[in-house]
Image (cartoon, rainbow, N blue to C red; front, top):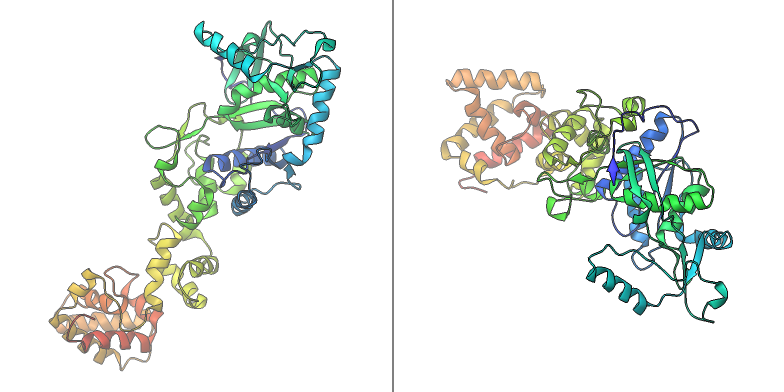
Length: 479
């Protein structure tokens, strides 16, 4: 198989664009599948076209309703829903068989009565001769009248044996395969069910798909699918085969690299959909040095010709840094709702919303937000982290008592007033402000890190703040 450059394939499509994303529902929405869906969605949007979904559920043993639901859930979360009701491949089996019968009638397919034992013998012969195994069925040109009555058979395509097939791939460039490498693959199994190869071609044709954008692990399939397309005299779609995503070590992305499903990035890692959208967009495609790309900019700028030909490497740290940016930009009401779903019980969403401007400054994901917000709803006596407990020495507890006494008279419980008061106390007592802030933070949050101490006091409110400070000041030992 030879390939060339894709640089000459950037011209605008000559017909209205229809793309499709066609996952197999055997599990979660894979991160690589999500990027394929994104590229199909963007290509259609950029050209004012249509983006469709197809569930390839012909593998009945492995296709499940929970997997279908997970795929739809992930696509909806990313904003990549289809422009029409999804197509379910299994429900179209009769149509697939109809096309196989049409190919039989036109002489472009044949009934093959090779037994499993005969196929094994042919395969072993090829291995012994150290040749690639290619089906050379004696039934290809046999008289149909010679068929054994009642014997099981499969329907095979008559693949061309001479010449070569060329694909002008939108990503890979010109790719050429000798037709001698394409065997007479099966269209209908012996039980009459269609194969994946047939079903994909028929569905793409019937759905009006003009551009097939998918992983480059399907590139070899394209040459087989073209045999069916040419035999049916159907219009050939444009192909764009996108390199797969690899892990940071350069190996194909797998479970050992961490999360694979879109749901894990959302539920386990606390990633926002706009961050994952932006990150997947930049994973193999770029627009100059732009890193932060909005949905609207992506639609305007996206072109398939600038998808790279080499596998891209997934970098979780980069995704998390990008997510931190989108957290800081996110609406506080929305963030409060997301964090409220993570936290135990039913936290006060109004308080969470009020706290978001302080909490989201340093957070990289919604899980960090939930952890940093936990102090707002902690019950007394406060559980202390080890480092926080170490700060609350006997001298520190005495100092907390003096701070509480000074603050009890303060009625204007605002950040500005509290800052002025505490700075005044520090100066009056000959201490740095940190000497007051450190034990205060430990007493108020149970931690050594938190939003600014004045913000913490305001968020907790006067009564709760004083109660927490006094609880530690009056404690003779670590609570």
